Length: 480
Image (tube, rainbow, N blue to C red):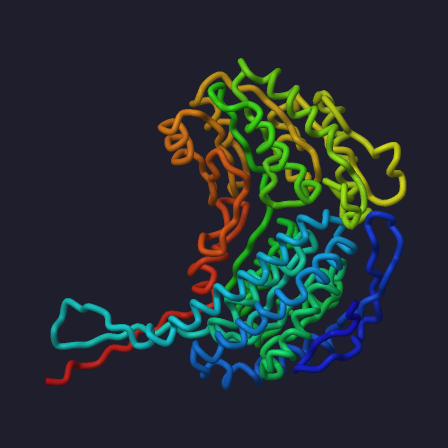
C-alpha cells in the first residue's frame, strides 16, 4: 500500500506526520499513510498553478490520451485494487469489483468527451443582429480542489478527477485519509501514463490540516466536495471567500415507494439492496421505505428474511454479503441513532445491534424498524448505515407527499406494476434521480446530484465536465 503524498509528479513524505489505516473487519491498524499539512497544500497548489497554463492549452485529444491510459491502468490492476478496497473499506469483494469497473469506465468516458472538445472550439452562435458574429468557447476554470469521502474510494475520485482533467484543469485531490492508499494509486497511474508533473496532486490528511487551507487558498478556482452536510456547509463558506466555483454532493434521506400492485419479492430485493449495499454507507441509501398499507406485512416478512439471510463478515471472505462499517466512529453513530429512534417510539423488527459472532471489528446488524415518528431524527436524518425505517401509506397522493417531506432530494425508487403510475410518481418526486422497478443503476452518461440539502450542481455525464468549465463568448463585427 502506498504511504506518501503525490506532489508535482513525485512521491514525498508529508509534514503532518502519519495517520493509521485500519481493517474494519478486525479494528486493527494495518498500515500508516503520510498526512499532509499546510506546507504540503502550498506546494501542491503551487505545482498545480504552474502546470495549469500549459496543460490548459493542450488539445482535447492530447488530454484524452492520458485519460485512456489511466483507464487502462485501472483495468489492468482491477483485481488487486478491488481487494485493497475490500480490506480498507470493508465492502464485499463483489461490490469493490463493481467500483473498480466504474472508475475505469469514468476515465474512458471523459476521454471521449475530451476528444469532442476540439470540434466545439469557437462554436458559432446565432445573433439577431446580422452586423455581428459571435463564437462560444468552453475553457477550463483553473486549479481545482477535489475532496472525496471514504465510502466509495477511487469511484468518487474518478468522478471528479476525470472530468477536471478532461476540461483542462490542474487538480489537487484530497482523498479521505481513511481509505487514502487506494486513491493514491491514481498518482502511480498518472506517472505511468506520463501525465505532466503538477497536473494531478494527491494529499491525504485531516480536514483541518489539508482541507481547510486547500479550500481557502487564493489560487484555487474551483472546489468540488463529496461528503457530509456539516462539512459541505464549511466548504461552501470557504468558497464564498474569493468567489470560488463550488460543487457539493452531500447527504440524502431517500425514499423507496412500493405500491400494492408491485411484485413483492422484487420489491423486497430492491429495498434490501437500496439500504444494505455497502452496509448502508451511501448518500443514495433508500432508508425510508413507504409501502401501501395493504401489503406492508407481507413485504416486511420478505424483507426481514432477506436481512436475516445476509452473511456478515470481512469483505475478502467469499461468502460475505455485507461487510462492516468502515470506521469505529461510524459504527458508534449508527448504533446511537438506532437507540435514539427506539427511545423516540420506533419498534425494531430485526437487527438493531452488533452481531453476536462479530464483536471484533465494526459490524452492525441489518436493521429494520417501524413506527418512527415523522419528526424523529431516525426518519428525517441521514444515518449512513444499514438501517431501514418503514411506514405505510394510504394512496398515491400520500406516498408522494411523505416522500417529498424531506430536507434532502437526492434519489428515489418507485416499485409498481402500473407504468402510468410509475411515470406520474417519478415526475412528482423532488429528487435528482428516480429509479423505476430497478436497482440503483448509476451510469456515467447520466447526471448525479440532488435537490435542496443534497447538494449544489451535478456530476457525471456532460454536466460533470461543464462543472469544470467557464463560458466565454467572443463577439466581433461581421466582415463583409
